[in-house]
Image 1 (cartoon, one colour):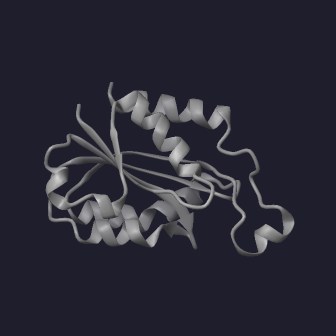
Image 2 (cartoon, one colour):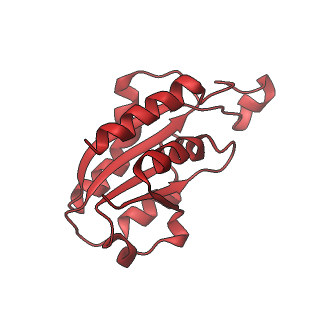
Length: 152
């Protein structure tokens, strides 16, 4: 299965670490939104969309990229990292804006992944950040398992 990961990972490269695990398991290529165009997507069977969570949703550049995509019937998955230790309900809320865009475009969402990531944004910098050391080995193992399940 030919796979592409569309990724925005900036501050501490938390989401990049997860994408690197996915890329290894799925033998996927990783591109940023500016490096990708809609025509590129036609050659892939599975597309992952991921970034850190900024103000309760995926990064603006990823959302804007998704908005510009033409209708399709491709399989996709959503992934993210965020600073807090959050429950399932919040992850669903964080992923909802991107998921809404993608499903409206016709993507079949086959999975979602989230884990904590080191965060020093804004006032968190004053206290040394939160979720230090994340994603950790356990998070990376969960990412491996998630990716492996996508190709079963």
